[in-house]
View 1 (cartoon, rainbow over the protein chains, first blue to last red):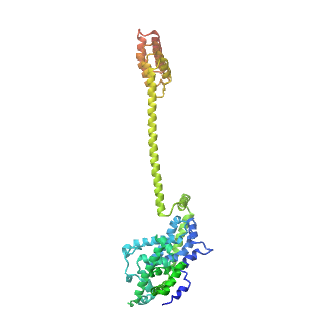
View 2: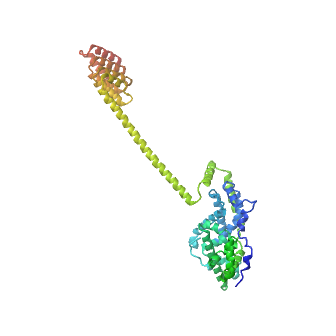
View 3: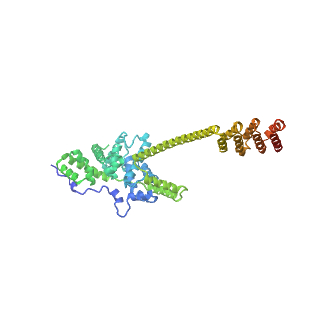
Length: 216
Length: 268
């Protein structure tokens, strides 16, 4: 019998630091408070929200679209829509759910506008051949990139079906809880847990398969 | 617990959000299940690699563009239009009172639509009812007048005099009734009363024509004299020929002839 992995006894890593840092600080106002101020007309508070969220949002779009230039435009569009639709923000204290709700809509619009060229959408589109996806590694040498472990992981991630990739990005990179994702996708937390597990398993299989293949 | 359900909990356990009971069950299971031990090891390895993936960083132009956009909005906010307070009030009302849930919005819209339809039907019913009432009221008035005028013919002379004096001269029907009494009633007092009642309307050509027509048929000298005075006072020049005829006719009562002569003088 194999002993339980030592990680089991360790403290779990703080995977929600990015979201908690902005709202648990006793001095700093929470995202919700800032958004209420923006809604009330104090537009300068949107700058604070931008500083907190533009980085994670940018990562969200880059990992979804694999397009850094377009992702900056999409982040800008999210904050433009926050300004435009600030009066629709409710007092439910779910700013992260709201901002990712806007981000998902914007990403869907982005994919729809490019459907003719890329034939990719957030959900239901055909899975692209991962071998044809752009390699996101900054390393110029193709052989070195293919051999690089992280580059392989990036390629495996980019090759996931869009809906699975979005789930993993939300859960693993944006640190949204299963409940928050369930609210966003209008489903249950239990369903989200199962789908995240499946997406992670698919990623794992693809990554290990890539790793076993010889470098070109 | 099955291996699938155990592995589905890996993320929650790793994130520290798994309940203590399930975390203990997961630990117990892992101690005895080789498959899940391998899966956990793969999960941890992949998770470490995901953690090591460099987070994409936006360029500085994103921040620059954002603050430029924000400044634009702030500038627009500093110079509000004439209707800015109204817009702000409506926006606040919308934000605070209108539901954000699409189902609640649909329900609210349905309720408003139903209220609108009910109000429209109620107002339509009320309009029809008011129109019916107005028509009924007109019919009642007409019947009342008809009954009054009919009763006028069947009453004794004294009552007919009172009825003539009480006739509503504001309506054309009342005037016609008076002219009819003047021309056809057999009682002199009734005819004289009708003529007196018609005095306020002496300038009405229809009244003057009615009196002149009655004069040609009148046989009572006292009524004839009263009619001549009426027409002369009203400056009814159309009666000149009738006055001349009465004045020249030797068979006419002398008092009537004198009145006709006097009336001619007034007309000329």
